[in-house]
Length: 530
Image 1 (cartoon, rainbow, N blue to C red):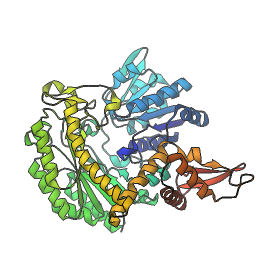
Image 2 (cartoon, rainbow, N blue to C red):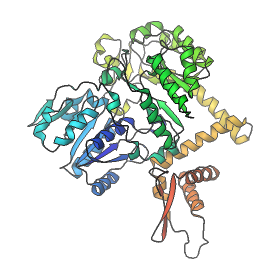
Image 3 (tube, rainbow, N blue to C red):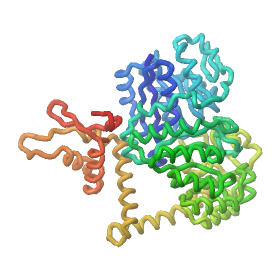
Image 4 (cartoon, rainbow, N blue to C red):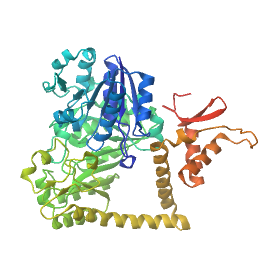
């Protein structure tokens, strides 16, 4: 049995990591005996024509994808395109969005045959042996499908008690060299679930109202595997990594015992950390921690069930900084009952912390308390256009603030940041910056170039050419590639040369002969591709 899994497009500006959910699903399919191929449209351009070509080449029996609310429309397009191209395919989708909007999804999109609800690994293991006989589907827990024009919602599947029984994520199926070129950290989990009840979050609904832990030695085994792929930076994406101080100690001590040298980051809460915990983390290579503070108004924090106070936020940030770790904070705009006063409180707290921080707009995803109990709150949801649920625009209003008020608040902050950034760029061009500021500017432009290379398939479109054209001087293939990329993108030639030559030297880009042409391509895994 062949399974094609597609990672739907996701904005590169949102700093995506190699898709963890899809990697776990792919590993489960492999463990169930399927031949699996992953096509990743996060780090390559998605077109229907490309997908159809993949379908014709691989000839899968199953096509699956997953999504969050923001990229759900793109995931649907993948399924629709696959089903229309080959109606005999079994199509399926998983992820948080469809887990809480299953019947409505199947009603609206007949091209989807089956939805996996909640954690999917156990479902996959049971489903694969009987996937070809629809009569057996009703006995599989945790799925929703159609039968004789009716919707069948099977018994809810319990959470996976033993996370150590799961195979490691199948990252070997991902285009790792593209992610290495992008330079973002790789995500891993050391636990699943969250014991808290924030009204805007899906964590406890999707993965349980509590924490299930992986064995520390197995966590560090996975870290070693990730490092072997060439990634120097790992992000622990647990909803609450610091929920158990003894366990944090075990993981940190295991990292130190194996003498692993890498940087890592994690998410934490302001009400369950202290300086000693941060010092443990720092001793094992942790260099940054992100806090979701959300609001500077005490009553708002109670309303959204955050379980913290502004004073706790100050103490946590101070302890983090004193331990040598860089703290980051995120705040949310458009929460229930938001008013000019609550926004002012938030801005004042953010400024007083004197750390890197950012603002996101509330996106009331299906399955969140704030959406399901909207009548209890001073809040109105203005759209169900899922493409707008990217937390970068206002899609709600309160009795005291309209969307334009919320966006004006964030715009004022962003304008300040942009002015400071423009000063850095001007200093870069006028050669008046400090060296560390120039490095920031160069890194920004380099990242913008990489975005273009990946999202527009620039290597694929510019990377095939004759080295020795009749009547012309022979040229170095790398120099020709750089010149063509600079012409296609408009980026500075020096920047393009430095970036592309580094990718070639690192093995992310390689070339092969094809008839009279040289063809450049992204390697799948630069360490094993020849």
